[in-house]
Length: 288
Figure (cartoon, rainbow, N blue to C red):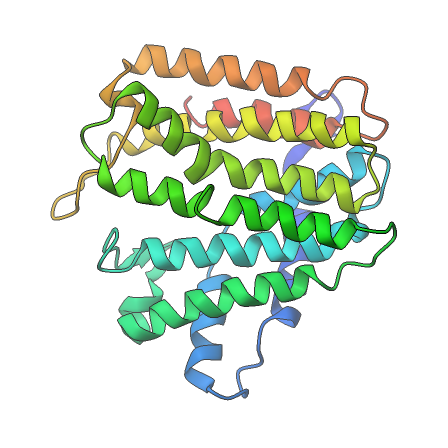
């Protein structure tokens, strides 16, 4: 996909390969004890994935005038944390999924107990890696930990997941907004803000990229709801969806509005914004 002269697919593949190598190095070696845990963690992380959140983190660091390398530890932390949420989402007590990305889910391959513990270990490793970020400015590491901690906890992803489960199939407007915000958008906001912080961005630039992440995350979830509408869910619990409240046309309009707002938030940033502009444009093409 080419946006102007920017080749998005080349950019994404280059970044993905860089992240894959770094993830392999960051995960526990297969020979480390307990070996079944190391194997399960690597299975969870290394069996595919777009690496969207860490790529956004690296792009944010560049957009504020820094380097992608400055944000590599936050980027890896984001991917490990995101993978932990997927491992737990797949558990029998949650979505009870047996396949993810064409491979058995962690609990399907290693058992439910190891599924729970592998997810726990990935979350712990995420914060360990985050702490390795070079302290180029006083307080940056603490700010990064705070960003991910807020996005991760009861007021973030976990809170969104709880409400998603409680109100699945019976959403109202306020609940839909809460779940879309916290289950999905909060981690996008964290990815962009963490990249901007690690890249040395000024407060205004960090805020702008957080706004971009907010609208990108909301658009991403709306598009996911539209794409999920045609999937068979026999034997699975109902899922909360914007299509319980909006028509497909209304949902598409909402997604388009958020992508426009995301792009507008990038104006005036000191570094290259082409990757972020192209990424948000690509989001809507998933509906074509």
